[in-house]
Length: 65
Image 1: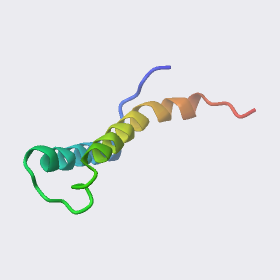
Image 2: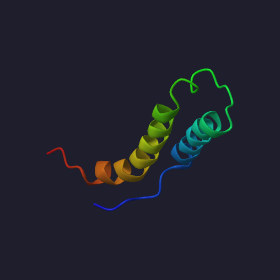
Image 3: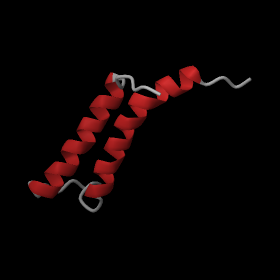
Protein backbone atom coordinates (compact mmCIF):
# COMPACT_ATOMS: atom_id res chain seq x y z
CA UNK A 1 0.00 0.00 0.00
CA UNK A 2 1.52 3.28 -1.06
CA UNK A 3 0.60 6.80 -0.18
CA UNK A 4 -0.73 9.43 -2.53
CA UNK A 5 -0.56 13.19 -2.04
CA UNK A 6 -3.63 14.50 -0.19
CA UNK A 7 -6.08 16.74 -1.97
CA UNK A 8 -5.63 20.47 -1.57
CA UNK A 9 -8.75 20.66 0.60
CA UNK A 10 -7.47 18.00 3.00
CA UNK A 11 -4.02 19.59 3.13
CA UNK A 12 -5.26 23.12 3.81
CA UNK A 13 -7.79 21.93 6.39
CA UNK A 14 -5.08 19.98 8.21
CA UNK A 15 -2.72 22.96 8.13
CA UNK A 16 -5.47 25.29 9.39
CA UNK A 17 -6.29 23.01 12.31
CA UNK A 18 -2.61 22.60 13.14
CA UNK A 19 -2.00 26.35 13.12
CA UNK A 20 -5.04 26.91 15.36
CA UNK A 21 -3.85 24.28 17.84
CA UNK A 22 -0.32 25.71 17.89
CA UNK A 23 -1.59 29.27 18.39
CA UNK A 24 -3.70 28.16 21.33
CA UNK A 25 -0.89 26.16 22.90
CA UNK A 26 2.12 28.42 22.44
CA UNK A 27 0.81 31.94 21.71
CA UNK A 28 -2.07 31.67 24.21
CA UNK A 29 -4.61 32.87 21.67
CA UNK A 30 -8.20 32.21 22.74
CA UNK A 31 -10.09 30.35 20.01
CA UNK A 32 -13.47 29.25 21.44
CA UNK A 33 -13.70 25.65 20.26
CA UNK A 34 -9.99 24.91 20.05
CA UNK A 35 -8.88 26.40 23.37
CA UNK A 36 -10.23 23.56 25.49
CA UNK A 37 -9.21 20.84 23.03
CA UNK A 38 -5.88 21.81 21.45
CA UNK A 39 -4.45 18.27 21.44
CA UNK A 40 -7.61 16.83 19.92
CA UNK A 41 -7.59 19.57 17.27
CA UNK A 42 -4.01 18.73 16.35
CA UNK A 43 -4.91 15.02 16.24
CA UNK A 44 -7.89 15.66 13.94
CA UNK A 45 -5.67 17.69 11.62
CA UNK A 46 -3.16 14.84 11.45
CA UNK A 47 -5.90 12.25 10.84
CA UNK A 48 -7.35 14.36 8.01
CA UNK A 49 -3.90 14.54 6.44
CA UNK A 50 -3.40 10.79 6.88
CA UNK A 51 -6.81 9.96 5.44
CA UNK A 52 -6.26 12.33 2.52
CA UNK A 53 -3.03 10.54 1.66
CA UNK A 54 -4.04 6.92 2.17
CA UNK A 55 -7.79 6.58 1.49
CA UNK A 56 -7.80 7.45 -2.24
CA UNK A 57 -5.41 4.60 -3.01
CA UNK A 58 -7.27 2.17 -0.75
CA UNK A 59 -10.60 3.04 -2.35
CA UNK A 60 -9.17 2.74 -5.86
CA UNK A 61 -7.77 -0.73 -5.18
CA UNK A 62 -10.83 -2.01 -3.31
CA UNK A 63 -12.83 -4.61 -5.26
CA UNK A 64 -16.25 -5.27 -3.70
CA UNK A 65 -16.89 -8.39 -5.78
